[in-house]
Length: 167
Image: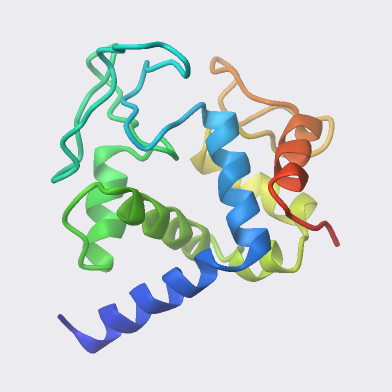
């Protein structure tokens, strides 16, 4: 594996250990309703949900509507998995891969340092373009009005409950 890829992966793994980054990812997962084994359409608490997957050797593909490939804890689509996973030399869809890709997305948006600093208001407009369930900011909706989203207060509450600190 290329040295640059190894360094990028290691940096992303280190970001995962930062309390604000970890809390931000948990808040995203809460808003998106994801689980590491969820395809689009899976529901938390549902036993024997046919939209859950066990094979993490690759991205699981389309969910309930047969179109959306959003899957996993952060509802990562297959093209996003290929792009960001490819940049990191990742080939599976394990929980660790999903976490590393979510951090890579945040880094590609240029918001990781602001998240570490607890500057949530500043990052929400950018991250809401990627995750449809996220609001653009306090008192605002999301970028995809036809899809459900959480309020900023709900996102902030999930973030703080997960140990995140706000600047």
